[in-house]
Each structure stands twice: as structure tokens, then as C-alpha cells.
Image: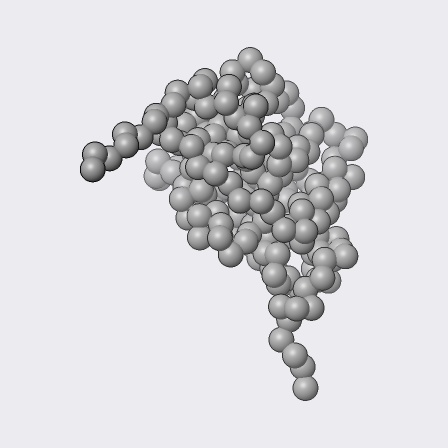
Length: 202
């Protein structure tokens, strides 16, 4: 039996279809990849992070965008939907519709079992090629754990280094110096029920 040839799309064709679609898909190298729906905990953590950052940035020229805004990594052609993005200054959009962002300074991804390896690996490889990006934040949804990767410009290599600062303590806050904010873990996990995943104590 002959195999069915794959359908390859241009970015413009993908965007035309995506704007009418009922479900989100990523786009890379002419192919689309369906994105799974998010859990209640995932959505609550995203909302909490957005609220914390928005409150601290409300008097500054920065905007916090939720997960419906697409991001294009122009160096690789990936178009995806980060859980949260922050832009300071004028947002740069592609494709003349104001829904494909090019210049985030912060990206937040909430980890799930199905996406964690991708968010830590290949996706971060793409994100590192976004020139404006200064902080990449990974937040666990099944335990208290927040990791902040901060770009460290270097002069002796072609690629910048990224410094990791992480915490697993609700009473701590992680600094985001590029936007002058703090990310308190108690606020990130406010009203998030983690009891099912926490080990029993004696």
C-alpha cells in the first residue's frame, strides 16, 4: 500500500488555518503538531504567575501576555504558544495581524508530564535564539519547584550562557533582574492543591 504523502504548510498557510482552528497547534518546518489541553492546576499556576508579574509591572512600560498569543522564533521558524510572555517596550509582531510575537523578554512554561522534556530541551534550544529573551522560567505543577534561567552575555563564544536559579521553598522568591521583579513561590502556588502528589509524613 502506498503511503500518504505528508502535507507541508507555509507559515502563512498555517496561520490562516490556525486562526480558525478549535485547538492549538505548533508549527515547525512545514508541519503542525497538536498541543494538549492544560489541567486545572496548570491554568491556575499560569494565572498566578501572570497576576504577580502584572501587578509589579503595572507602572512600567511592560505587558504580560497569556497563552493565546503565538510566538515565532525567527531563527528557526518555530511558531508556538508559551504559557506566559512579558514584553517591555514596543511589542514586535509578525504577519500583520498582531498575534505572532517576536520580542519577549520573559517566557514562562508550566511543566507537565507530557511536555517537560520538550520544554527543558528542544524548546529551550529554540527560545535561546530569541535575541530579546532574558529570563526563561520553568514551573512544576505537581510539586513546589520554580527554575529561572537568566541570559549571561559572553564575549568568548557565539552563544550566551544561561545562569540557573531555582527554589523549592514556598517562603522564597526568585529575582527577575531584567524586569526588576520578584517571583514569590507562595504566590505562584496560591490555591494550587498539591496534596495528592506530596508524600505522606509520619
